[in-house]
Length: 230
View 1: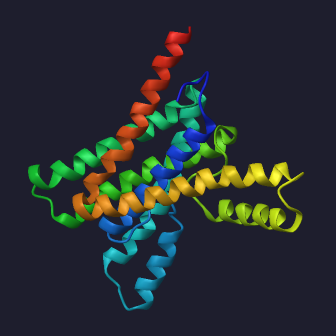
View 2 (view 1 turned 120 degrees about the vertical axis):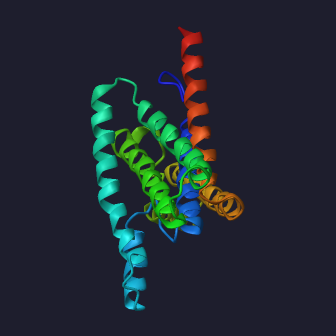
């Protein structure tokens, strides 16, 4: 992900994939907590409370909201301190990589119970997703749209598809182009969800290391390409 030259399709797909992967991985192996769609945790919390749950496992889900806010604020601060906008994503990649490593080693090296370790890993993952959300808002032109929340993207895709059905493909370049862009975003998110669910079932929260490493590698490749062009 070089600052000088990059593929918007690739950046969009990768970030949507990461968000879908992390969101599903923390939901599957992190006590049904969403790390990207943090407002979805309000629904899970309400459902658990309405079912009679008064334990901390229900209330812990609300902590994702202030953690997310702090992460977005940190992303804004980081954007002011560096001229390289992709540094925000590098920070996200390092955080997610650290999460995966910690999820693997903490249960082995400490005497902490499983639940505290799980919640710690999930909350740090939320930090990473908050940085990605900040990047999407601050540098909206770097992607085809939001990469962590798909409702708006699906809505736009449906509007473009409806316009194409009514008026045809010919002379409808804007809707056709828009539909292709949304297909990249939604397809990336869906692929991330499927892979995240499968890997998390097998490896637990240590699965978070995969999207983290993917972002770091992408960033470093971009930096090397930029240096060669100079």
